[in-house]
Amino acid sequence: MVSMGYFLSSEEFGPRELVRQARLAEHAGFERLWISDHYHPWTGEQGNSPFVWSVIGALAEATSLPITTAVTCPTVRIHPAVIAQAAATAAVQTGGKFTLGVGSGEALNEHILGDHWPPTPERLDMLDEAIDVIRMLFTGEQVTHRGTHYTVDNARLYTLPDEPPPIYVSGFGPKAASRAGETGDGFCIVMPDAELIQRFRDSGGGDKPVQAGMKVCLADTEEDGVAAAHRLWASEQLPGELGQTLPRPSDFEHATSLVTRDMVRSAVPCGPDRDKQVSAVREFVDAGADEVYVQQIGPEQDAFFKTWQQEVLPALR
Image (cartoon, rainbow, N blue to C red):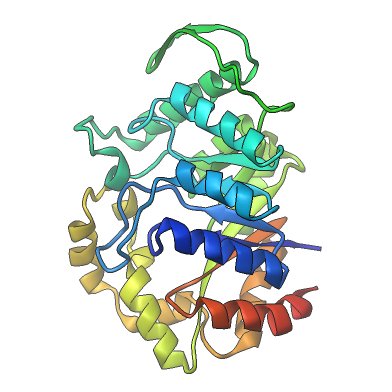
């Protein structure tokens, strides 16, 4: 049976509202949490970007659900030695229920200190080395590392969980999925792509967990849902590597002027149709996902949790 989680959007909501949603998710019967890690929202309309590690500390006290970052970039904006400390602390706070989800990142968040934004092959190499650094520090030993991209000088973590948190790796293309299979304890995706999941498994992932994230927009009418999803998340329909290379929310706002409502309608289950939302989850299950995290777009959070508790989650189970 698929394990259902809720996807907390740090782009749309501030820290106190994210904690409130987490409580609602647990009460409604969701079994786990994803939370995005951003410095900027994708567009100004989304309007938020709280520091994820502070929010995780609050979530650990507010709920008993396992938490995964979806995903943290440990390569440019924050050194992997610092991410290791943050993840180890989060694992202690959650009683061992924290998973560090990592990815190669986007210029949107990583350019802020003026660093060079590397091409994809270099970013993947940086991610591999960052994961190595984090795992070395998770041992609790004193670490000195002088690698291609990172230097660590006599660093040691003193606050550690009983077991190191697993590291799941995201991937949006074949090469990234293969690398995730080689380096990750699990895989994170945002599309029901059976070939991508199989590539992860064939590249060393085996039967390791696959987490998948998706969005819905429950609303009174389909048009209301499409309007909200288009206003807040048209950025998800941008083609190619624009999502990884555009540096500012204003750049995404300009680019999304080319995204039509029909494009959003075809990609996001919108409106009151519960069966459409169940079918969207089952696409991920059929593709091979073990855990599916759903995000409700927009402010109708209370109605969403009530509907999923009473109708959608029972249908899935």
